[in-house]
Image 1: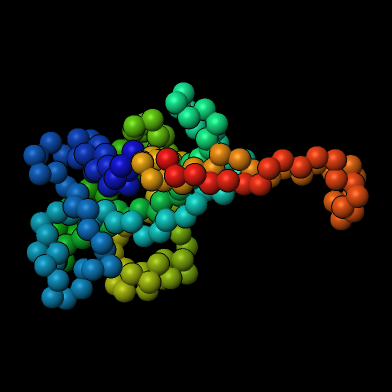
Image 2: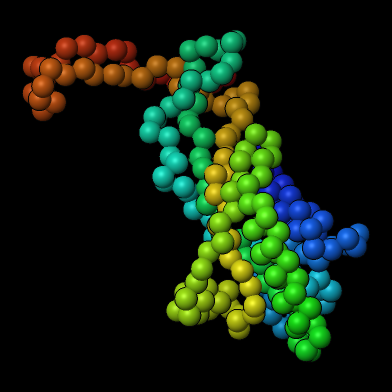
Amino acid sequence: MSELLKKSLDLLRLTVNDYVDSTPEGIIEIVNIAALNDGDDFLESSFPIILSIVNIQEDTVARNPYLYEKKVDNSTPDKYLNPAQHLNVSILFTAYSKEQKQDTYLEGINKLEGVIRCFQQQNVYTMEGTKLILDLQSQNINELNQLWSMLGNKYMPSVLYKMRMLTIQHDPVEGDQVIEKAKIKLWKNDPEDVTGLLEETNDITVNNT
């Protein structure tokens, strides 16, 4: 699942383009909205909608409670890997126009409505075995002010989505360290009482594959 974030953004861009506009170039450009300041080349963009990542967090609700998962590999049946991580990625769709004329402003608003309609119709997508779920995030005035202050720009019409359940799993290669054994202690009652220790396995060993 290499370049999963990039592929996810490309999937969303193509999905919205197919829904809103049939032109080959589409309506969305994937650009860091925080870079849209005076003097940047991106100000010449002719795309009415800018798609940006504004935050990435771990989905702690979906976190695997187990420290390690068994590797699904018949050649190394006793080796373990860290569990996959699930991410919440905040993505911002912004109606942007360099000229800020009435017709281009209204065009951006219209395209932004198309984005909302697209993900209202379908907000769950599957890519490379990973499920992407898009939730529209409502923001009050204070939250909007904090967001755009962080981005270093004046407010522009925009919609914020949380893309949930984006799974990141490292694919091991030769030389990676894989845990083969772990120390496990079994206690009678009180873990502070060492006399209550019933059984103890070998120490952790880490080998290079």
